[in-house]
Length: 169
Image (cartoon, rainbow, N blue to C red):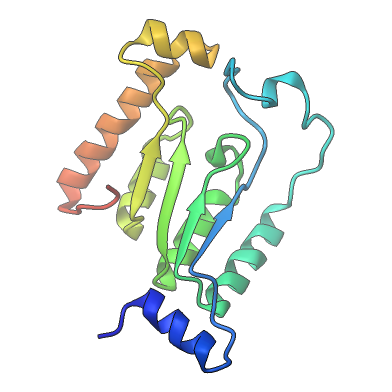
């Protein structure tokens, strides 16, 4: 079996235009935190229009049709604040695309966690900025966000165990 990167190189050499190996999507610039190191709370993105949910789903379908190998959903804000994020995740997984996400971990709920586990989303990376609530919350500008993120991580673990799934990692 030929590796995907080698397959892409062989296709280029043959004069074909292969699909992208990985695409990074920023479904929203909206964020529920006020991180001291981020431009979002400054209002830099204020007034910019967000891409509508139906357009994000069209873009995701176009990427699937192209045969993109991997997708990273992250962004200038918290990805789960976009209503398009979970439906996009499901679409990518139905097409066999490897999916990763970077999140602050505070917006997930039981329904979205259950959906991510059930669809077999591959990887969720939580942004944790310190070993304790005092450090993390101080940097994130919102009291309680450390405990919320840790609770989300634990809920993922419980739901994975209950379902017998090893995804997401």
